[in-house]
Structure formats: C-alpha cells, structure tokens
Amino acid sequence: MISKKEALLSKEDFQTRTDLPAWLYKEYQTFHNIVTDKTFPCFFGMSAELKGELRYGYITQSDWSNLPQTVQGFLDLFQSPNYKRHGLFVFVEPFAKEGTIEDYRKQFWAILAYLHAADKVEWPQNSPRDPDDFLWDFHFHGEPIFVFGNAPAYKKRKTRDLGNSLVLGFQPRKIFKGLEGTEKGGIMSREKVRKRVELWDQLPKHPDIGHYGDPTHHEWKQFFIGDDVQPIQGKCPFTHKSKK
Image (cartoon, rainbow, N blue to C red; front, side):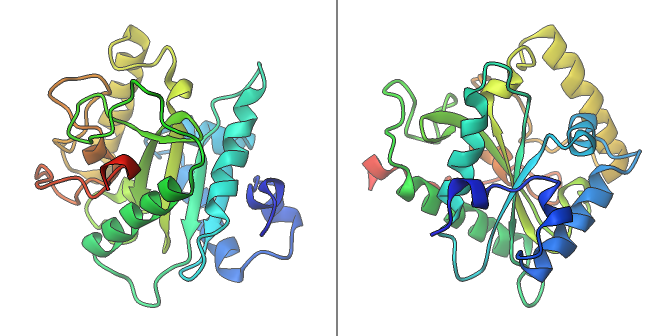
C-alpha cells in the first residue's frame, strides 16, 4: 500500500516523476490544457491550476485501494492555519471503450461507496445520513466534501468533459467559507461562473444546480448531473453504512 504522500500528487510530480502510469500523464495534460484555456468558465480552477494549488490522485479500473490515502492526504493539507482553497481531482483509468453517461455515473457512485466503506471516522452526529434530506452532504474523515463527476460522455455540457477519464473533483466545504450560496460574495461569484458555463455549454444551467442549504435542493443531484436540461429522477445511489 502506498503512503499518503505518494498517493497525493502535485503539478510538479507530473513534471518530475517517471513512475506514474502512461495514461495518467496523458490525461493530466489534457486536463491542464482544458482548465487553463482563457475561456474556461471556472476562473477559480484556472487560477489554482496555474498556481500549482490543485492536487491530484488516480485509481485504475482494477484497484481503488489508494483512494482513501489520497483523500486523507489531501485533507491533511487543511490542517495548516494558512491553508489555500485547494481542490483535489482524481483520475480514473479510462474504459477500454468510451461509456455512456449512465456507465460513468454508476462508477462514480460506486467509487464514493468504496471511499465511504473505507472511512474510519464516524460522520458528525448532526449530519443527515439520508440523501433526501436537504442538509445531506458527503463526508470523509469527518469533513463535509462536495464531489462532482466529469466524464468523456458529456457531449453537450462540455465543461464536464475533462478528457478520456472519469474525473472526480473533491472540494471540502470549508473552502467555500465566505462564498456560500446565501452570502453576497458567493452569489456574485457563482453567478459569474454559471453564466460562463452556459456560454461554453450553450445550454441553460442544469435544473439540479443550486446551493447547499436550500430546502428545495438535493445536494447529491449536483454530484453527477445529466448531459441535458432534465431534472434527475429516482433515488440517490448512495447509502450510508448505518442504513445498510
């Protein structure tokens, strides 16, 4: 089993390490080229990538065992009093043949279920276990985290296509401090990004996109949106350990 330090990668690692899988170098370069495009909608992600503030991880189709160490190593960065608004992107080894949106969505939730099963820290007592609760959010190692999926099967929502890999983005909720959906700064920042996203995608905002804490909103539906303008139907694929 690799260590947390080895599992968590930086921008520099892709320039200096030679022991990573060949597919990963290719997928990272594609990711870098996309998010540093001057027209890329998320200027937070663009800036963080250019400054080397993002972190990365990877799993293969047959082995997900380094994912818990990767995420925990990432969360350890926030123990510093001067932590930056880091984001983590985990690349999944590409399918031999590109799948459908549902194929990637199924794998996305299976990976989160795997991570949850490996979590040794109980969720906070007051955190809802039921995804149907509007205050539900995903936790790992005691931290609430917003996770979102990106995949090559997105043909209309181009901002969700970051290469040939399924890519999971992890954003601890603490990085949104001061940028919450109910805060003036958060409202303005999100609206700017969302307008740029609509321009890139040539589609209106997905109906399931909202802000945490909105009683009419389900957070889990934002994790892996559709490649359309239709609300996600059905039950959340995630089940907390206590509900099994």
